[in-house]
Length: 243
Image 1 (cartoon, one colour):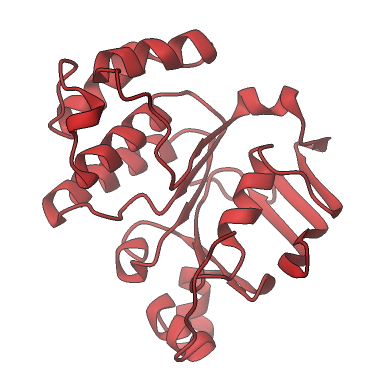
Image 2 (cartoon, rainbow, N blue to C red):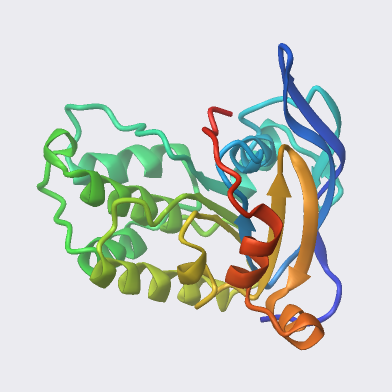
């Protein structure tokens, strides 16, 4: 991990409203290169909406979000790899087709890296996407996203439906990418898992930014893990994150 302040992705008073619902509420956040951030919060906290705005898939209602000082736009998409929670492959595709599809769209997509990740995830190129289980589909989405040599990689709930052994392979892949000058942002409800490899945490609640902290600093300052801090902040908070 790099040390020193090198802000790569930042938002200023970023807000997104859907009719009467404010999904992201005036969030000012700086994310630095060379770190793995855990974006935490219960359903409805605004994590997914913030990530989609960073990926250029959703336009802000107000405020600004920038990559290296450039406003997020179609031009910045080439530097950002985003894995959404929704499935986004055609039913006729094989796993091999998925790789070719990404290669056509992204100059930084590596077929060699993709095949390496498929092998680690115990997937084969001959498999058809329509026959994949929930867990296998999750692994495919991670493989195709992380096969890009993007400067920013955002994974939204990458561990959902993944068994314990497969999670180990995913974490190993994430750590390999983290050795580069890359910013990784991972959202998950599996807080204990994120604590094993993230070094910084972003806590959101009801669309607002509650806290940004280094995980080691949190331990030194308060003697708490991010799991303990999560329980302190959210208690019994629940709900559905439709945005």
